[in-house]
Length: 306
Image 1 (cartoon, helix red, strand yellow):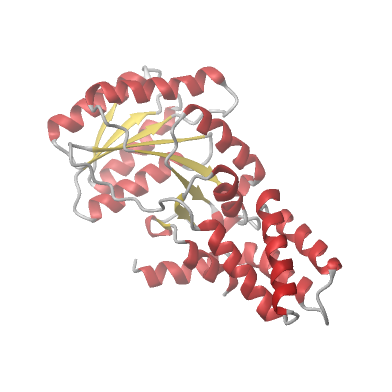
Image 2: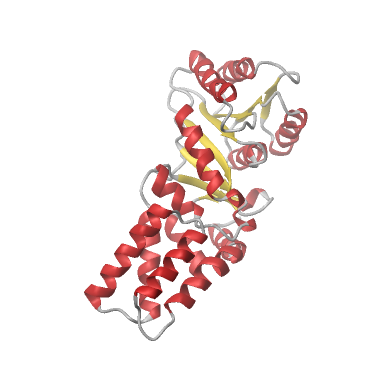
């Protein structure tokens, strides 16, 4: 799908967040003059949309300053200020994914909690990369969930990517090492390693991710080149807490935020960027391969306010 096609779908799929966030913001600002009551209401709306307390306070402070400096009272002008504020908050960090390593296979480790859409996301990434002409190998390091290996195998067949998997209950680190070894031997462009979903507050499971990282590095010293954390947008602030716990264990390089089409609290993208400082690299707005794409702050905000 073209970028224009994704943008059109993004506008449509953000309807729940648009109604909850933008619709309420325009109502709050659509009054004869902007007073403290308007800012109080705006603060409640932003926090209610999971924009996050820190980001919300900054937005309110900056909008107060804009009103005072330019004597703004027109609601459209204030909405324009809010749009620029959101773009500025979402912009920091490297949002790109180049998928290339000059020293051999590019390795991406994919982590997340149960039910975040992690294995499906891994499969979609494989399909996108093979469609671009890259050779891809999937590593099925989720050996706890019986359906995970089968699900990944289906994506392997669908995308044309190779796969390395062991039997259910096998040591995940052993699978990761064998996948790295196979990726080097086969000289593939990309290795995507799907890990088991885990509760963010289970120390032993989180430490296992560290072990997987270390084992990969024994075979490919500079790997993994990307550590992507898959979060379910419908979990809201709980997803933010999950992310905090994962970043204490993993050197997370980016977030893939899934199921944005199913939530009215898409402001979570701002909270993640502001409070964790981790760039959102991709967003998912549906079940299809074309419903997963690179995150662009300007495009996201424009789609939200369209």
